[in-house]
Image 1 (cartoon, rainbow, N blue to C red):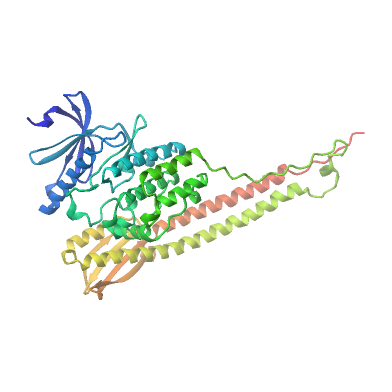
Image 2 (spheres, rainbow, N blue to C red):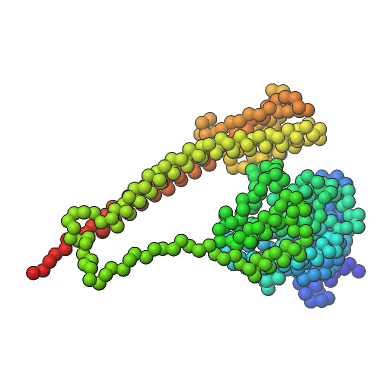
Length: 476
């Protein structure tokens, strides 16, 4: 009997690169479940080796999650195969992923966020003690159920100690680039439980600051930042964060695994300490109160001293003029900075893109397949700032991309780099960057600067009108 006959499909609830997920009803046990079905599109033209690897990863997810019976890890009910179609029946989670919560931009209390990450630490500690390393911790794989329970999902590229599944690919990069640890790019054989701690540190950083610690305009730049560069301390982005949490996140994101928390339990304990021992808020500068006037002292001085201007009136005017000049200078310097940033970013990004293209062209399987190169050029060209890409080999255009029409050459910044094959110049790669984005930003800067200057002038004018001292009249 087909085991799937016990399940009645209701609807499709998700679809990814290698699987589709359906909401179904377990007729025998009268409960809703999620059925994840491996989907191998024949139009992709995958080799037999690639197809087998996808099946192995799918089986690995089932094997990894099935051995982890824990409240904070998605439960696996059944694994099966029907007509060469592999599927997993798992717990149906009603809730949202952390990725969805980040997209909603809803601001949650810090204590609420820390309690969620603590639950993830508990789940990872349970998995690590049983020889399972997730290797793809990211917001999409952490679900917050409607009752507040945190569930870790998607063990598709997990590593299981003592298992032969996907063993042939253990030395290659796996995971989602923004959340990978440095060793996942440099020494993949060294990846252990501390790699999951780094990835969870990235998730926590994003939750409390609203941005990723490591970014870049190209995958290569992101990888370089993860391996070599330190992130901006979270408190510089969100000064309301406790100092202790800043240190905890910094330790979780250490480049060397030996400098991080050695277990997920250590990470959990440190976060619980932050909840218990919140750092004191930095005291604000005391405001000096003016001395109280003596009841016997006359208080009509501003009105009986002729035409002398009251210092209390003069001070706001001086500050207003200073701010007026500052806003003007800030607008001018911002416009000049935008122009320099365009040149610098275009130089860095073009260098990274050319480096990646040179690596691809050096590959015999790719370098001679101009259709594949054109696909890469079109994929890179999806960046709104890129207007054109031309790969010229031996005076022949072998691949290119051209964006939307621009007004003229003055609206495009063109940068050229040599095309290198085996270290020798074989042509040229030209990349054109559109100036449309910077021109829009400059227009906005001019607009805001004008608004700021106008607002300050209006404030000074109104202040002078309403703060003009009235004459003191004595009634005889």
